Length: 158
Image 1 (tube, helix red, strand yellow):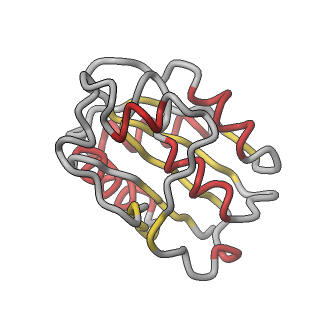
Image 2 (tube, one colour):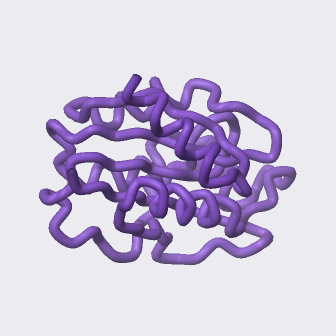
């Protein structure tokens, strides 16, 4: 089975978790990078005019992604990681999902958060990539150990 661990990390926290997950599952890593990197001001969720706030208030927003996954067809399972923004995945995750035909692929979200849970993230993402086979997402600490991550992965196949 070929596994891809794709992730968007605004502050580096989700990247740490993605690296641990990739090591646990033996998957390839792909960073979902915005064409225009986010600045600290862009990420200020308290500012109603910040880029991230404006994006999250517009459900149709699709920030452009820099780069593509080469040969996406070879992957059977795709873990997709992100920080929770406003109780859901950042809009750039939708851009990524819409870029590929995920028919028949297993997609498994994972997230980091400073305190909020997954909210309606699973249901929202499933609407973006309806032809994928989805497994329930999970919020994990960025510093989760390999053992914690492995236990979660094992629970997906139980």
